[in-house]
Amino acid sequence: MRKDIAPLFREICALAPACDIEILNGESVGFCGELESAPSVYALAKRLCPWRKGPFHIGTFTIDSEWVSSKKYALLEPHLNLRDKRVGDVGCNNGYYMFRMLSHAPREVVGLDPSVWAYLQFLFVNHFLRSPLRFYLLGIEHLPLLSRFDTLFCLGVLYHRTDPISALRLLKNALNTGGELFLDSLFIAGDSEFVLSPKQRYAKMKNVYFIPTQSALVGWLERVGFKDIRVVATMRTTSEEQRISEWSNDESLADFLCPTDCTRTIEGYPAPQRIYIHAKI
View 1 (tube, rainbow, N blue to C red):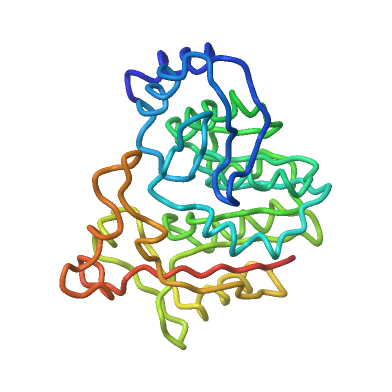
View 2: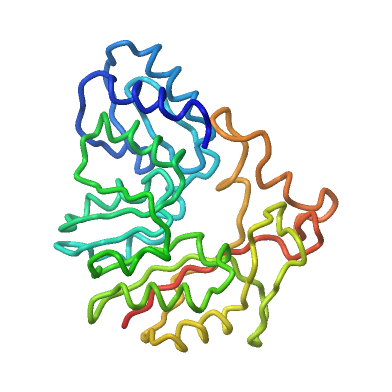
């Protein structure tokens, strides 16, 4: 754990009063207006870098995260029906998607993520917005400890698991009867039920283990008991969605791809493509 966690936590808790949530331009979560001690707030936000998900707007400045998460949310939002439902976001990062879900009037939204840094970012934003969101420093393996959900989101998690079928079973068992799952995963092109298992790294990530074809992923979902499986969208990841910003690390998608062939990762694998699935039990 980084040594500056405790002082950062204390500084977040000592920040100025709260404001109401706004969604600006259909993208940024936050609020507009003057801030007490605005330079100090900005400096603290910078100390919380890197920001992977966003954007967030805090008073007079925008946290321009590495991922333009509004693009993924725009794909999913037309398919959402969260009113009065208990919703879980597994691998919620700093809570960007959870903040966006509040406009659909869910009964409760719970986020799970084991990253303390993501939790600090969530605390920072939520200090101002005072939302009813709940954030647990837990992973997908802790789902059995919680009450069941009506809707679960699992976005960008599955390919980081060494046993994806067990992970899908955990998600299925965490849903109420008639519940639904929104799943986002890397996938590879192909009509057969094949899976890419990178030898060491994929797009410089050392924690990517299995990247299925669409057929293989649907087969995994069927095997653990999901039904009414529907592909919402498939798309190639581009620099419009993932790129370096002043709020991110000094490497991003362009650095993960082959410099002479953008259809390949730097290791020679097919470049990242994502599949978005809606499934029920």
